[in-house]
Length: 272
Image (cartoon, rainbow, N blue to C red):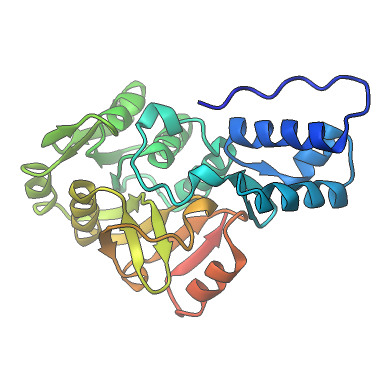
């Protein structure tokens, strides 16, 4: 687990020391914006970009539009436990959650997938008291527990199924059978990759199957994915990008991958 970045001293830092501390800051936060690094280290945006360029050349970070993230975060070849990634890119997930919740109206039925971005949506629903008489169906135990304080304003239904410990998720058998008997107004689908050609993909296969079932069981399906997941491809195929109604992401998404998604002519691409 990355160490917390050391506090800056008042003495000017050498270039090497500044880059070492900048790397520590990026690894600790999971994602840092150029503007935030400029303020934290008291150097110009141009200097930050030069430092990030050097760190990328060393293979320790990956630059994305507006900032940088640790190189080890990509390509995310193995699944991380819910608790490990819960605080990663927290501000991006909060922005996505706020924008996603704008799609919900009182009285709706909502399918809410598993994962930390879905958890951010659950927190948003918890605080939006104007959203009453919602029925939320989830296959995530963590999601259900987050929503529990909002009962009876919200009705919370858990799909049942076989427990996967990493995400505290419920999968087939049983979870998919419950979803096949529902028709929800809207579904929010998390994933590990969104690509114009490969579509919506996920690291593990059991959850990919449930995500497909949620898309089928909803009138509208919205994918929620932070910028680090745009342009990525993983093993478990969930759906073509054109099979969902919208993708909500953030400004850190690679510009080229965003352009390719827009070139599809659908789904609606929302930058939170």
